[in-house]
Length: 64
Image 1 (cartoon, helix red, strand yellow):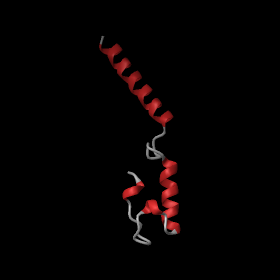
Image 2 (spheres, one colour):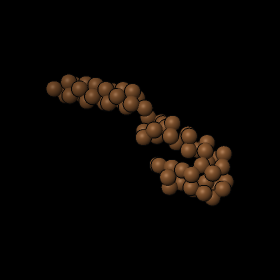
Image 3 (cartoon, rainbow, N blue to C red):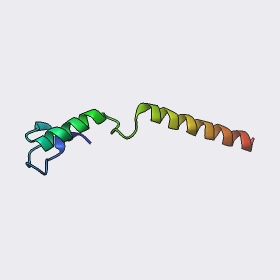
Image 4 (cartoon, rainbow, N blue to C red):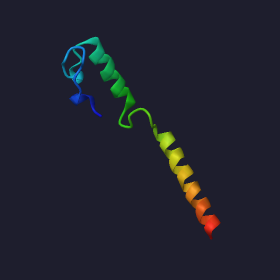
């Protein structure tokens, strides 16, 4: 989610304007998270894809 559509519960202004300390803190947090949302970084995504490929290869090898 982008912060340009969020409204601050503290000052009722758009978060991207950064009018109060709460807005500024949330804006900084959202900017640091980046497009992946902060919970899933690219290395984690690559590791998950590698595990999925290995699991499919193992399954294909067992059925053949």
